[in-house]
Image 1 (cartoon, helix red, strand yellow):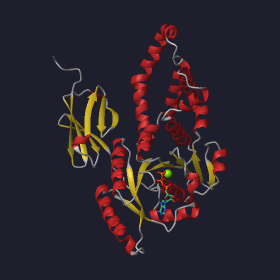
Image 2 (tube, helix red, strand yellow; image 1 turned 30 degrees about the horizontal axis):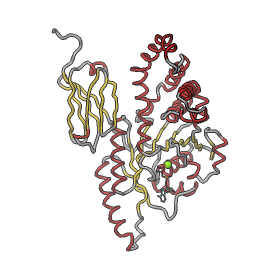
Image 3 (cartoon, helix red, strand yellow; image 1 turned 180 degrees about the vertical axis):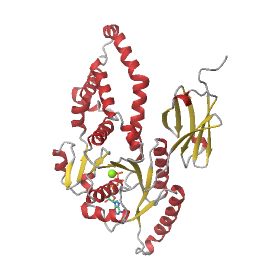
Image 4 (tube, helix red, strand yellow; image 1 turned 180 degrees about the horizontal axis):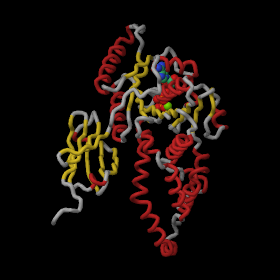
Length: 401
Ligand SMILES: Nc1ncnc2c1ncn2[C@@H]1O[C@H](COP(=O)(O)OP(=O)(O)OP(=O)(O)O)[C@@H](O)[C@H]1O
Ligand SMILES: [Mg+2]
């Protein structure tokens, strides 16, 4: 089983590169599905397919060739399948707040429902071995980060909030329902959440297992795009995901020597060199700008040949460990590979068994192993490309005070 994420800034060529990789994988005989994580689905457009084909298939995989499928979710279908109870409670709530039925139904599609539905598919495909390879065409950076944060956020929610909420509601219901007009969620609502969570079990481990899952960042040789690639790089590391290649797309080919493009060519060369510095030792795959847009199977195949040449696209081109927890001189240290970080951007706090890392407006809860959670103080230092978090003062309940 192999899962490859293609992520990057909007418009850099993620869908093309993901599709090209899917084609190469399927032609090598692996049953491959390319799934779109982007609400603005464009897989069918890149493959130059009739949109109706996908619409009629109601979000299920569409077979394109002997070993190739593409899948674009249909959120309405997913709601009926996975979210009926949750969606109906939230619609009722919005309806009570004065919105009409149709609008309440539309607004009750919560952020995250589509992503969780996608995770449910991934989990099922892995468990049932439906495909050999899953290629994920991500939405632009911000949204794809929300996607990868969902398993940990949900785990946190289930551990810290869910049970308490369910219990409180059970006890306050008889009183609250007499006082307030707002309907409280029934136990079927909580049971539905629990059931979804059960069906997601294991997916978090799959996404951080470098033997199964790797991330490839697609970028262009331009200042702002590279900047965002660095940010994405850091966040994927923070989520413990293994990045195994950087694809620099839209490079002006050598045969372009028109004076008009002189500055473009010179700048692109500089940014490619910078990218090598930034991301080393992760391999960089350069791809030229095509003469026209990349559209349809043959163009995508040509793109795949440019990216991978004779290499096997399913290889893990780099294996690193974003996290490393060690114990030295009785002190635990958590090293997180977070290049491009400045001290002012980072805030660390520890709350019982969780470490909360805030980086420039982005927050991640890391659940700590028991021994580490028992330590008393936490201090962070930046050591080269690594953020080193020191946990001091073990407290195994043996302290004499
Ligand atoms: N190497 C290339 N040469 C020429 N055109 C390209 C190349 N790579 C991508 N394109 C074109 O750029 C456009 C955007 O590509 P694509 O849809 O793959 O980007 P994306 O990163 O998925 O965008 P979004 O963030 O909107 O999902 C498409 O029209 C595609 O044909
Ligand atoms: Mg896209």
